[in-house]
Image (cartoon, rainbow, N blue to C red; front, side, top):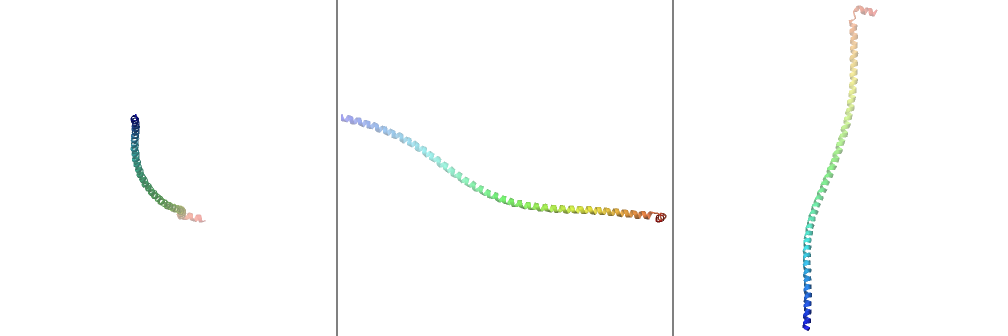
Length: 149
């Protein structure tokens, strides 16, 4: 009877051991599956990290290029400002010269008009003198005497 009880206990222990082995096997399978998923996730994370690292390098290169372009644009703006000032100065000088020339031109036109008027007056007085002289020369002598008397 003692052997039967021990056998019964051994069978119970075997069943318990088998259940524990089955549970451990299931847990081991679950852990293997989880490990595979974690390894795949880790690989994806590494790929993403590498991609982000490359993107960061590209962004840094682009930033450096933008900085260089900005410096070049600032220099071009400074140069354009200097050119703008020089052109404004030239325009001011040309405007002053134009105004001076316009004043001189208007003065010369006024002088010319005065001189033409003086010439016309002189010509007119010379013509009148000539006509008077010519008229006095053409008067017959008898009429001259009558005029004198």
